[in-house]
Every structure is written in structure tokens, then in C-alpha cells.
Image (cartoon, rainbow, N blue to C red; front, side):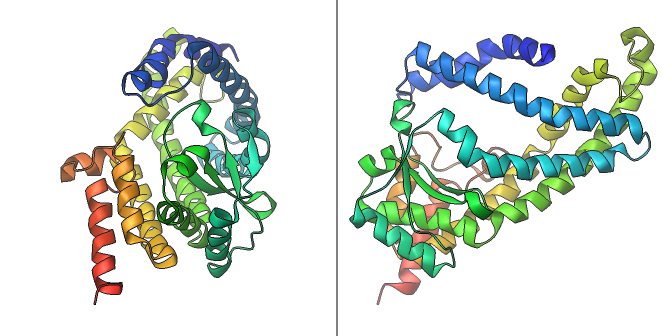
Length: 314
């Protein structure tokens, strides 16, 4: 907990610049500082609880399995990820927004129809008040098992036409129908194995050189947590293009699924333009490979128009 608080304080200037100042400069944020700061404190409290639930068993494994801790650690990470996905929609998300059942049949019924046609047993759609924080449009089909929920924010309802809403929701339904949640859990399990192997390699080198000076006895010593965090940060920094590519491929699959489900290519293209409020529409190929975890706006519009020409145009 001390480490978490210290890191939060050290990073606060950057957090404020990225999450508050810059968002306001670009006209994307709607919160005042006091409301934004209150939510940061709620996030800190949630992180404190979740980090404790993760690190206690993780360090137990570090101490009891000195040779194979990296494998058991990855397993704990996957179990923790499943737990977070399960409780997120029910216990964490409502801490930041109010979720209500969408009652408008003109919007609700086409969404539920697409969900049922895609094999999702759903009887309601939820809307949440994201406009109190931002004017970005967003939606998701999150959770699994008994916590699965179809949700869209009020910005999507206010800023978009019905074809655009259907295009967005078909995309989100696509993620769920294509089992991207389960696929991502497996993928992240592999990433965690590789990450912990990288940590084992880096930890050994660092302790051999500075361990006596730092008074860190080994991976099971809590005093090594800053080093553990730094090595993970380096691993994920180096892996950014590959992680983004994996996510971008899934997003492209959901895009194509959504086009077939909603049959709204113009609506899809219009939404891609709206997302250009905060995503560069036409990046270079290297730029997109490194930094983009979604297809660029240009790629999405081109896909939608190609789909239109092959399916709707005579």
C-alpha cells in the first residue's frame, strides 16, 4: 500500500496532464477538477484492494516455488484477470457511472435483435452517464456468465443516428460472439508467462549487480517490488507493437462482424469519422503498427465502403 501511494504521488503530475489538462485542451473532458480528483481517489482505493488480492498470493508463490514461480505466477494472473472481468460490471463500474435500463424501443429492439441473432441471450440494454466525464462515444458488451451486459453511453445516444448506433453495437456484440474475451484471457496468459520469464532474467542480473546494495534477498522479498514493477514496465513497453497488433486484429474482426450483423456501412463510416475527434484518421503504416490498438479511421472507412460495394451496391 505504501508503494502504491508513493507511485501515485510521483506520477500525479503526468496523470493530471494526460487525464485532465490535455483532455480539456482538446475539448474532450466535461468534469471539473474536484470531480475528476474524486474519481482518481476512488480508483486508487479500488487499485489498493485489487493489488492486495493479487500480490499476496503472488508473493506466496514466489517464496514457495523458487524454481517455477514464473509459471504459477502466470496462472495466478489469469485467475485474477477472470475475477476482475466477473466483478467489473457489477461492483467496479457503478462506482464511476450510473447504469440504467435503456427503455427507448427504437434503439433497444434492433440491438437486442442483433444480439439474439448472434447467439447472445440478452433481454435488456443498459445506458450509462459517461457525459459527466467526457463527450467521447463508447459502448461495450462486457463480463461473462451471469455478469454479461450490453451497455452504451449517453454520448452515443445523443451524438449518433440510429444507423450509427446499430453499427457500434453490432461491433461490440461481435467481440462477444467471436469469443474475444476468452481468447484474450488465453493470450494474456501466454504474455504473462513471457513477462515473468523476462522478470526472472532481469531480476537475476539486477540482484547480481546491485542486490547487496539494495538489500533485496530475492524475488520473494517484498523490497524488490519496485524492481519487479520496473521490469514489467520495460517488458510491456517493448511489447507495445505486438500487443497493439493483437488487439487491432480483434477489433478488425469485430468491425467485419458488425458490418454483416447491422448492415449499416454508412453508419459505421460516420462513426469512424466521429472517433477522429481523438484518433488520427490516417496514420502511416509504422505509426499504426506501433501505437494503434484499433484500426485507423481510414482503414475502417475503406473496409465499410468495400463491404458496401460487395453487398449492397448493384
